[in-house]
Image (cartoon, rainbow, N blue to C red; front, top):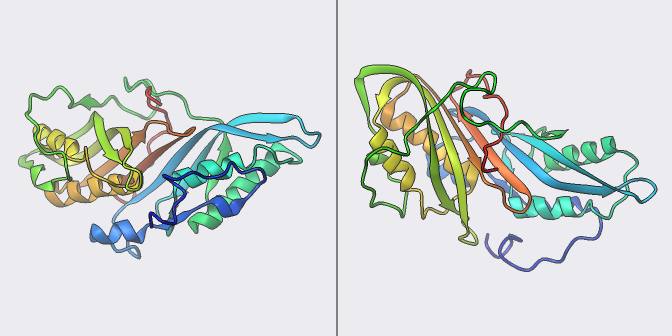
Length: 276
């Protein structure tokens, strides 16, 4: 895979609109390692992308600039590699379009074809979410980052660190800003905040924090990391309902926000992390 991906090697700046720059990756590759049957997913969800550097030429050659949000369903058979998406968006920079609607429709069509499922594209970005409960529909979360715990595992996620107290049933939202993993191709760091909302046996916070820290040198795509957290929390802690949402910091004018939840849970309101 590393010999084909545009990530990690010099790539010519695209001078014309080119949907072939999009590089789809089968989700089944990462899901098989987690024991997930791609035909019967244990979760609902989506990947919400924020694009901060979007531009094109109007019909008379005057540049236009915008931001945009892309919503890719978790049930799509493929994810889109982020560097290829950046290159694709750059291919719009010197291309004339009759209208902004044509740009939006073109991006939606091309991303849908790459992902293998309908992708929603809207201009604009969601509001910044301070995490204080002020965003409608998003209750305040309790940070676990100040938990007094020693950490010494960083090379690979260790689900054995997770546990829950069956004698204590709770409905709570936990938050951490300490999730870090690495790009599986270049080894560059990916930083994220993580929000875990669940109902069921009380999750041990010290163990949860140590588990999240154990991702620190793990090589995995954003979407795969969130699915791993979801699957391993379900297996080890057995919540009745679970929602896992990550907000990764921006790279190359894009940030990715995967969300996975037990089927039937409503999607969290769209928002951006202050670090984004």
